Length: 202
Image (cartoon, rainbow, N blue to C red; front, side, top):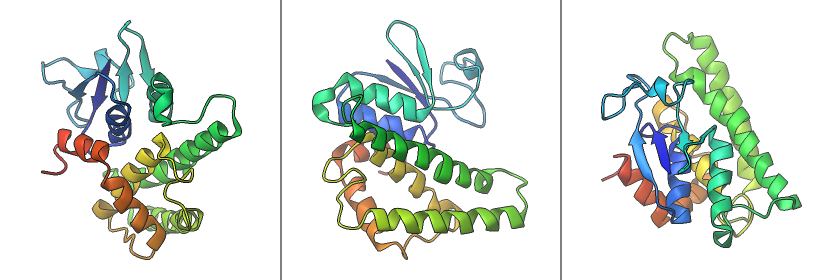
């Protein structure tokens, strides 16, 4: 498999999932600014949408969208319990978390990274994020991870998205449960390995 990523972007989530799963894969940098792969290939010829993550399977088929990709990765190694079994209530709770992180957090961060976004829009995004993170903080009370004691692919995604706070002036310190949770997730060997692979930490 080939995972196309851009350092520190949402593609870090499936990158973490790959290390957690222990699967063989090739990580290929696809910078979001240049869209040029290391060998000079135009990334748009690989993924017409031009963004990451993008996963190419060994048979040549491809998968777009992080939440779909991380579930695919998890389902390759069910014994790792990175996602509950398909058809169970718990699996739908996982999908609920992935959807929430993607639509309520990830996409609310987007204007903060978009050149030309007016100050009022940025301020509104920050306020919306604060409200959503306050709710997440409450949901994490008494839990090791989003789904309880078991780390899942949703945790990798939440860790990555909340990591962006430091780049946009969003202080996470008011959310004690979230801060402690981020420390737990950040200490996982697979998370450290993925972040080192992307040059985010030494």
